[in-house]
Amino acid sequence: MTRACLDKQPNEVAAMFDKVAARYDITNDVLSLGQSRLWRREVARAVDARPGERVLDLAAGTGTSSVPFATAGAYTVPCDFSLGMLREGKKREPWMPFTAGDATRLPFADDAFDAVTISFGLRNVQDTGAALREMLRVTKPGGRVVICEFSHPTWAPLRTVYTEYLMRALPPVAEAVSSNPEAYVYLAESIRAWPDQPGLARGLQDAGWGRVAWRDLTGGIVALHRGFAP
Image 1 (cartoon, rainbow, N blue to C red):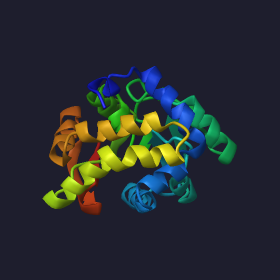
Image 2: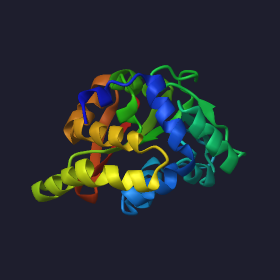
Image 3: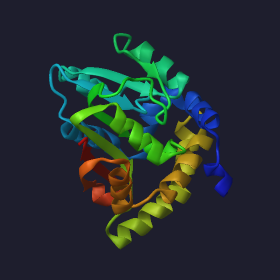
């Protein structure tokens, strides 16, 4: 894999996700060895959506991650930059208000949401800082952000095994189960290049979020970061 894999333009990344939309959720389940469902449950607990609240779910894809917030009674807006993902989501959940949007230029008013969340999508945004500032802009004072993202395993032996899996096992597995294996080669490289837990926490603080904290899932393979709007 070359560094050029990470230099794709937003329209190229969106096109990749358009191609994997139909089998995206099942592919994720296979590649994560079933852990993706556990991670989604932890996100739902961290967001703690309540009746009457407004929740923005960025990089929502087909809306699988959005359903728990809506089930809890919150008005939930699944937002994604991949039209293919949104079309697939609308077929599955026609009642949800799927919205096309760029995380760095969100099509929402200031202070529009009680909570904003993004799972496994922040890595794919070219300007992470701009996205974190936009999330803050659309969040009400006192509102919260929850970010679920691949991170860095905290135990050295696990980190070694995980890196080997990403670079050697993930591409051939993706080729067997995905409609567009190239997308998962890109994802593996983006995971390796992503900041560690303290690095993302600093990014949140620099963007203006307060009371930033994180906790590791699956030994740090994934981390949940949380912050509050001042």
